[in-house]
Image (cartoon, rainbow, N blue to C red; front, side):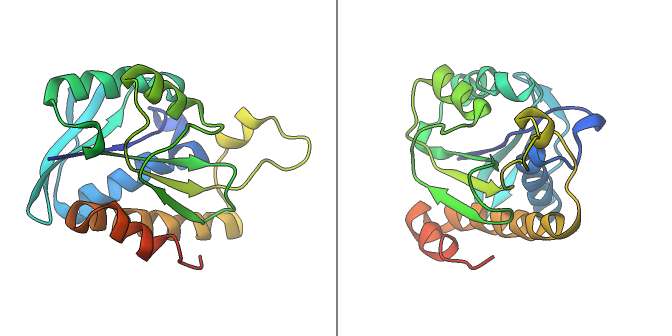
Length: 189
């Protein structure tokens, strides 16, 4: 079983913002595979289904981004899956808009949501998919930037990256993180 977690902030106010690309990817997977994400449990919305014949739980934590780890910890404790069987999808300001980066493990970098996850589950040994949203323009506060809506060319690039991120999740479930990294880290987006 795999637990696929998209990071984001709950509520209409945050829809289609840079910080919610993880939610957007999980929503795309739910539509592709007919998995409804409606069960409220473990401080998250969950959907249970199959991808490539394997059971998956799609997750959208309903804590705010900086507390995402609380939800992830509760889910891991409940389902008792190995940490390497979670896949976390999130935005990354250190990557150009639309660029994907898959990793089998690693630090949180500058992302507070990932910092919370790693702190709460006491491990960074899980696959992650980072979707580049670019850095804030001169004079912008970081929080204002990641909570702003995408527009123009950046919106187009990030929407395309979300499709590839969903493809990458499917590849990880089917063939493993190494195969997925070889396939998606080299994409010219």
